[in-house]
Amino acid sequence: MCMKRKTTFFTSLSLFGFSMTIAILTGQQAPSEAPAGFDTPTLQTANAGSQSISNGISEPAGDSFARDQQVFEAREDSRLGLGPVFNATSCSECHQNPVTGGASQITEIRVGHTDDNGNFVNPAVPINGGTISGRSVINDRAICPDVQEHVPESENIRTLRAVLNTLGDGFIEAIDDNTLIGIANNQPNLSGGEINGEAIQVPILEAPGQTRIGRFGWKDQHGSLLSFTADAYLNEMGVTSRLKPSDTTTICKITADPEDAPDELGMANIDHFAQFIRGTKVPPRDTALAARPEAQAGQTIFENIGCNICHVESITTAPAGTMLDGGTFLVPDALGNKVIHPFSDFLLHDIGTGDGIVQAAPQDTAAKLRTTPLWGLRMKARFMHDLTSLTLERAIARHAGEARHVAKQFRGLTASDKSALIAFLKSL
Image 1: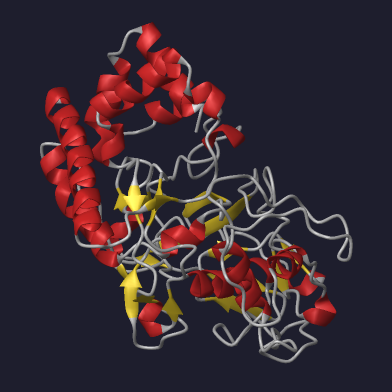
Image 2: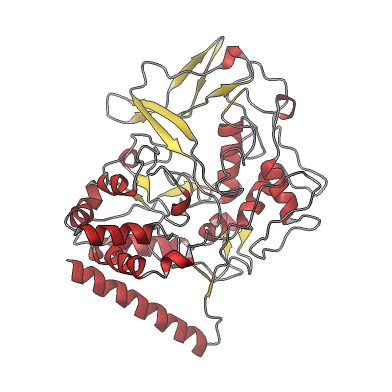
């Protein structure tokens, strides 16, 4: 089984080289590596000048990468639409490790229950004078005591969700749907039928009636960055926008919906959020660690035992000029035809750690979560979707379900081989 996986990996490399040759012979531009770097340090003051460096993306007329970052870091208050219930006062309050746009140690609460048919149902959360319903998130904070949420006793499905990294997500958005579908279709062949990632179609909020393969969020609930940012703006900060125009409650509310109004450039905050994320570089590897013999041996072990079937090492984005997101987003030169190394397939899998929550149908996704991208892994002190695994060894040990055979092979490794695999992971 290991040899089959190893052979398939090298076949994939051969096919990549073959596609490079075809590109050269046909006059097409060969794929190039996406720029990498933790290059978005937090702005000290709004007018101090930015030390950040983008991936080279072209900005809308009058806009700049520094301005996009400034909006991403700007704190909201109730006069600007914060709340009534919320988790954070800015995007960067959660997305900040090691730089603006990264992940963090923060978790959010998700709850629900199942009906008589076993289908997931969102909670109805009682507050003073009303109810908040239609979503699984429970906000930790509120702008007044009357709207503070608490987990109802009726909701026996309860989980924590880690804040995700957004650095490099513009490249993820630029992956063609067929690429992800192809990965999913090939996984049973690579794993003896054990692994079968699920690609789900989700609505594109900015293109009503259009769908796309989901890739953002723990449940792949969004397929575009604009949809993702609008949803987060409402659920994490309580700010409404043109794509999410209604607040969760009107109790204690002092602003009119939608609260996210366009600026003098015609861009709302959600547009700046998406533009900032699209302009970030991918998380870089620690090249010094990666060059060590132990880490290189660990990468071979990672491939041989089948970790890379889900944690896919290399993906090429769609060509520049490709129209995505229901016809609303044209892949720019900075994101198109780029090779990225996310160590993820961005598909949903049941590895025995499913949190029971359904955010985008079908109901079978309750037991599934998106494959965690491993790029930037070395910047984390806690692991898995709930951040309850405090070592990489423990995180690997939690893998079951579709990953049970891979986890079994990990348990069968010698101590030195386990150490090498961990050394490789710590280089990411």
